[in-house]
Amino acid sequence: MVSRIKAILFDMDGVLIDAKEWHYEALNQALKLFGCEISRFDHVHTFDGLPTKDKLELLGRVSYLPTELHEFINQLKQQYTMEIITQKCKPLFQHEYALSRLKREGYLLAVCSNSKRKTIIEMMERAELLEYLDLIMSNEDVEKAKPNPEIYITTMKKLNLQPEECLILEDNKNGIAAAIASGGHLLKIDTVYDVNYTNIRTKLQSI
Image (cartoon, rainbow, N blue to C red; front, side, top):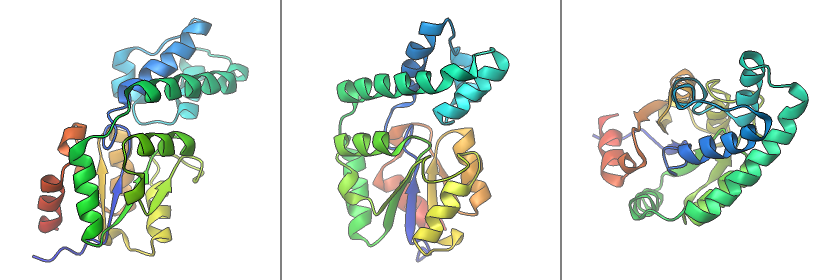
């Protein structure tokens, strides 16, 4: 069977980078300075996959975190995240192999993340994946973050492709909802180790 797919769109955290804990740790590090914290249960079931701005707005509603602190906390969180990236973000061979081979086979490759562009570029450089990407889409490139499908729909338009020509790799409920709503094909990821050439090729052959 010849695949109709022309582009593969990757979420970043939990798909290409095992960074979900990093964001959780960095945000809590910033929040603790103001007597607030996100529980692990709430992180997994509510906050995972949302951009920091949305997390803070939600905390403002449920924990009465003052709105005037949100921007400062966001800045602290980004600073702490960068420190963790410097310490922990390293290449993973199976990802380098998968993306390099898919690139040679002619697929367009893009990262579509709720993270800030600076964070995405830093992680992709440290993971040695940046050279394989045709496009990077961040939460700064859209008005509505995941679970809204805007980031995927916009990416498809930039690549001049239809949804049925795109395979999306996502791991959390917000990203999965965005992928499904965009009309693209979905490959659900449980851990970063599920992202390998064999699994992606198997999915491509089934479409």
